[in-house]
Image (cartoon, rainbow, N blue to C red; front, side):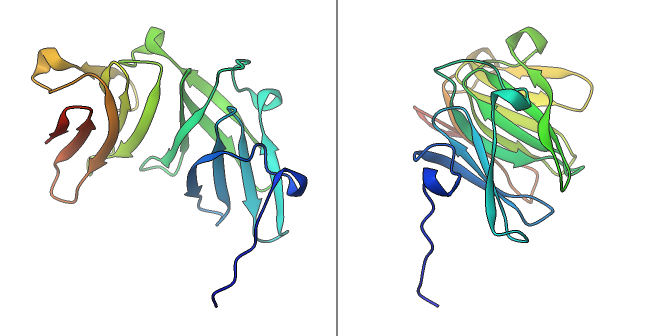
Length: 173
């Protein structure tokens, strides 16, 4: 209809710098912010609510939400500069179920992109390479595996089964 609503911190937005957007299975819009918080807009209530440190996010002043995605089972994953978070949510609560870091098998903690392939594997693109998670174990891929760069900015799993990897040195497929 050509009109827009503008949401700010006074409306419940965590921070003004919104770095990523995602719509979940409940038709709620998740907004990742530069301050490491998430705001979620609920169209049923027409309200924004915050998901932050009290919901299980790492207590880091330098935290930043870079991407939000879902896996084949509908779970929500959040990529930050301090790892990746598996979220649990329902109509009443949203909180961190588990945080994953390099110690768990990620190629890097600065996760910039998350995608799911046609086999249900979850892929994380990070500063440090890419990681495939099959639901039980992590497998890392780096320049040693013939990628152009370990500094991964974006990932896309296409419908033909190819994984596209956007780096500072071009695109790998």
